[in-house]
Image (cartoon, rainbow, N blue to C red; front, side, top):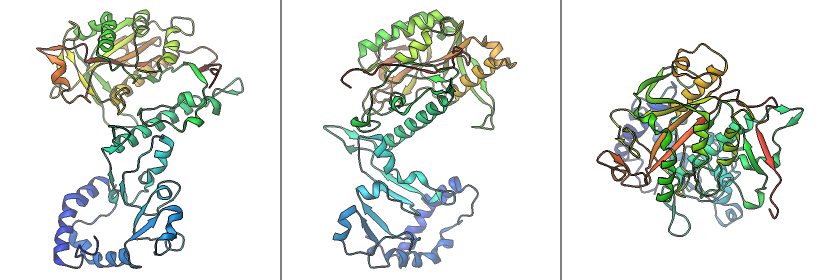
Length: 453
């Protein structure tokens, strides 16, 4: 308790000085963005007494913010208009978590659960911090909160997933903002099928808000397509791996260094090792058409698009198959179905144990998009030319993935340099050429809503 912490004694100053050295000093150095910060605890010591007075003013350091139940507590009112600098610990439920702005919030202790992403997003009170005090922000969040029967929810992962959902959704809306023949490609009723769900336990919103327009085709010229709901059943995982057999010769090729030049994300040139091979369009589609998925086949609208790149919609001649190799210090190599040895990568499924989070490395994705863009603009790119990437060539990033949710992980998946095909998921990201669309420039196709929806 605050009253028992002796904040006027020399003992408290020793504790606070240790906390400053172990925590605040390090975070300030990393997050202060060049703003002035104290160099030692001694610079803060003269202000401790005044801070304690402000926190305990009004009799209690704690204010209960809990909707209608506030009247049950004898406490000062909370009004940020009249008292802009509130030095208190706020405790509350629904009101505090939704629609209530806490000005100057720095420390959050959070354990509240929900199964709806839109509700969870409203609870993220730490998302709106402004420049100037980001180094003071602290978040204490539940990593194993009881959730349903015999389940736990990692709230950190949940918020990470809904942030990925929102980023993907904003990217989708920006892509489909272009009007076609004076008509929008996307209407509010058709938005739902585009909403990503990176975490199976947390739905986008309540069921009664989820309309059922059925999306049959998503065209993504120049943009990554990355499925996530790979099978859990070992027999199906092995069957999928065998379907990739015609293309696994890429693992026998020599590694080469691929370069991502400086861009808006980094002023540095980034490099990674990869094995590459050019494959015909028909060979790739032949593999993708056979793959099985966990639950609803969300890849189907993308496959419908990719299948039409044989000339029906646009003409793609071939694909550059790229198998990125992990850094030598972390590399675990193994043969997959008698292939040449290649790097295995670890990725973690979300809590529902079906969908993974992001699989492809961010630098790998940016590299693929950069090469595709330059080839589409007919820019003289030495790298694209050396790899055989032209305006009618796409890129496929291929990753032999071992589920990191399994504690044994790579150790159990590899025996004497051979990977167990029941544990190796052949995951991929596809980036089609920028011109891979027809003259209508439409990116979406729907069919009539299913009856009974």
